[in-house]
Image (cartoon, rainbow, N blue to C red; front, side, top):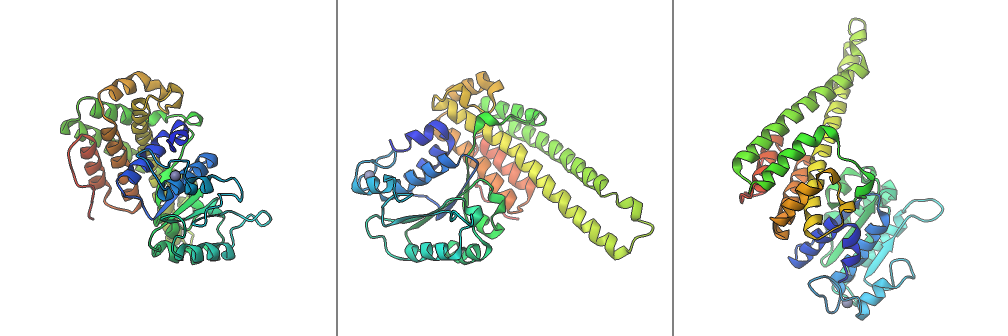
Length: 352
Ligand SMILES: [Zn+2]
């Protein structure tokens, strides 16, 4: 009941969080990313309620018990529950300073007094000052028992890499504001074919080939682009070899970062397609779809797929994105993910 409002604007997020709750597999720390700050605060509140509710249902918190009502209370910001603490940037400096994170850490290490779990919410977590972020990192590395940390940010890339990597990322999105990239269309076609045809291993490998061709071309394009921009050839005869070497290393790093961005964008297009299937299964409005031009195919697919299957597919691609961020073998991770999408039971773990 409680996740209903969230499900209306962020169906995939609501589904993923509800499922983790139902399975008792919540992460210790989440990074809510996206520009829908209102939805992210709503999700944080619903999650805080769900883990502390006195009579939770399958759908989440009851919204009526003492705990739920205290968390919902409007003032102070984030509620009046002793176990749920919110911090946000101070109005003047627009920074979250170390006193605020220390306060939060202290509170997280106490036993829950009213509910079952201590919840810490950091709104605009990208505004954590360096000192505050570093001190907070220790809490993220060794989260206290029965604690849940929720970091909310519209610009998560500004967070320390080490902070990002210790949180499970949940992407929030405003589908209406974005458009599928034309260059990704063949990949989306391949994914639809894979899901629609009862998912065969052959189709998985067909999509695997298309992905490899696409990614190879992207790598080449990005490298050429970076090379052209640097115009190193001009200096090759005259410049100091050490300087040249350093420049070349920089170029390599730049190309690699850009390639990873492009790869993540292509996978996000596929992720949105899987999310769209879920939206259709949940009976969501056509306006909520990202791939609106594929509405008919998506609805047809939704008719033949269970919610569980759609969620498992979404999870397969999310796992792939996470693995690639951690630098696992690209081809292997891709192969495993596509086989999972074809319906095969393949362990998600990829060892490099
Ligand atoms: Zn309740």
